[in-house]
Image (cartoon, rainbow, N blue to C red; front, side, top):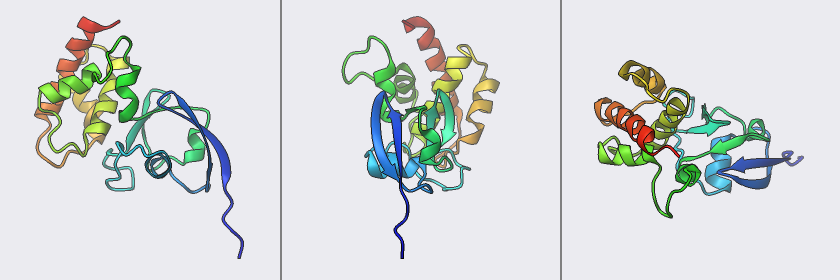
Amino acid sequence: MSRPRKLPIQLQVNGTAHELLVAPERTLLEVLREDLGLTGAKEGCGVGACGTCTVLLDGKPARSCLTLACEAEGREVLTIEGLAETWPGRAQEELHPVQEAFVERHGIQCGFCSPGMILTAVALLDETPRPTEAQVRHALSGQVCRCTGYAKIVDSVLAAAERLQEVKP
């Protein structure tokens, strides 16, 4: 019996380069969680329907449960663990303004979906700094929250948009 073949890949995750040997069928979610210890992205449905595994791939939301790790080679992966560090001028242990808005406006709830929600919001606000409520709801439409309605989450994103206008470096 032959051993499964592994591929050498280099991933750029949260600004750090990682050289790994991975089986071709391993997902980005598996590699992030199991090999790199980055457990912020969660496996919810495992078929890309719930959004809990969302990370940013070259600044765009991507379902890490549907993305093969080798597909991410040479691309920039941002997880919730690295988000605050990307904010220029922040003090150590300080949250990204979108994370702060989620905490202050109670958009966090149980927290299982929060990393995907927050990263999706960051991508939206990067492209649309002053979104309407409808644009926020549309952007978050692929993110499932099982706790309750989305009112506090949408409110958090709109508050984050205002905050980013005030503190943008």
